Amino acid sequence: MEQVKDIAFPGDVIAKEEEYLSGRNTQEMDGEVISTVFGRISRDDKSLTISVDTSKQAVQIRRNDIIYGKIIKILNKEAVIGISGVVKGKIIVSVNTEARLKLPIPNKTMYSHILTLGDLVRAKIISTRPYYATIFDSGLGVLKSKCTVCRSELFLEDGKLHCRNCGRIEQRKIAPDYGNINISGVNNE
Image 1: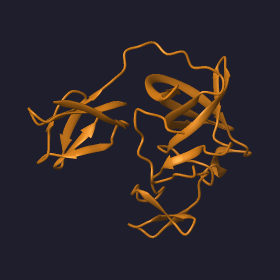
Image 2: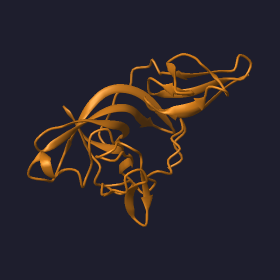
Image 3: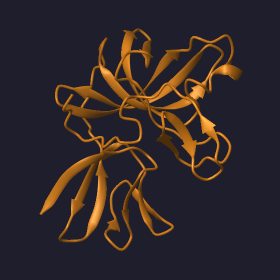
Image 4: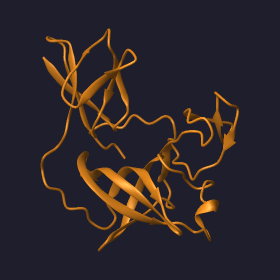
């Protein structure tokens, strides 16, 4: 029987090859099954396949909607979020659009204490024409980040982001649940 569980971002490891075979919107790499899209993880225990299902419904993003996405570009005084999902009621719906995020800093060489390229973020839409978002309200911020030197995952230890690979300590505007996120299709906030 097929079950629908967690939500996956592109690049997330969703299973080991010995557990499941790669299905829709996934690929096998180094013994792991990796998601290639944002969507709900679907496990079929009969055929032992794991897939990622994307939503095909049209979604209108509105002011104050909570979004999930990845920092895909840093400009002079703003960043661009590639939006992957938006909270609608109690579910997270897959979308594929972008929003701008104003940075309270003078130039792009000083942004890394707030966020950096590739960071996964939770943000709130503050304007819809064009989409502008903020990560500076409570409950918002970076959910997952990588070291700017060696690109290994950063872990929250003693209030600081620490790279276990190279020992670097970095700073971001982190969400309260940084590193402990289990994004699911149901919003329990």
